[in-house]
Image 1 (cartoon, rainbow, N blue to C red):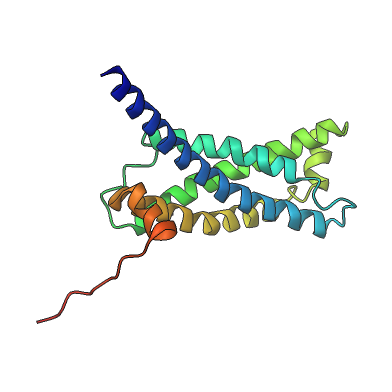
Image 2: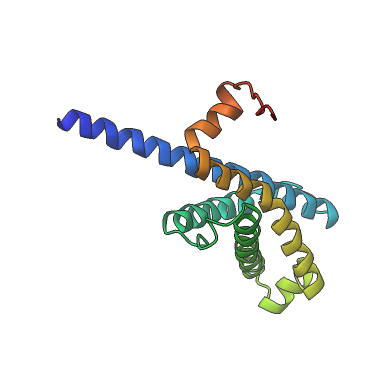
Length: 177
C-alpha cells in the first residue's frame, strides 16, 4: 500500500516536472533568441553574455506560468472558444515578460554601477515604443505555446506529448452524408 502511494507520488512528480521542463524549454529558446539578437544588434563582444539572464528569466517565468496554471490564473475563459483563452493568456503573460525584461535591465545596470534610468536608456528597453514592440513580439510568440497548453488541457498532456514525440495516429475525417 505504501509502495503504491510512493509510486503514484513519484509518477505525479515526474509528470509535473515534465510539464515544468517544457514550459522552461519554450521560454528559454524564446528568451535566448532575444538575448542573442540583442547582443548582435548592440555589437557586444560576447554574443552569449546575456544567455545567463535568459536561463534565469526562463526558470523564473516557467515557475510563474506553472504555478499560475496550478492556481487557475486566466482560466475564466477556458469554456470559451480557444481563441479567447489563448489570446488572453498570451496578453497577461507578455505583460509579465515585459516586467521581467525591465527588471533584468535594471539589475544588469546595477551590476555595472549604472543608475536605473541609464541602464534602461542604454539597454534598448528605454523608449515606450521599444517596450511596446517587445511586448507585441512576446504576445505573438506566446500564442503557439498557450495554444498547445489549451489543446493539452482538452486532450490531455500525455496524449499531446505522444502526438508530438511518440507516435502519430491517423486522422480519419468524418464522412459527410
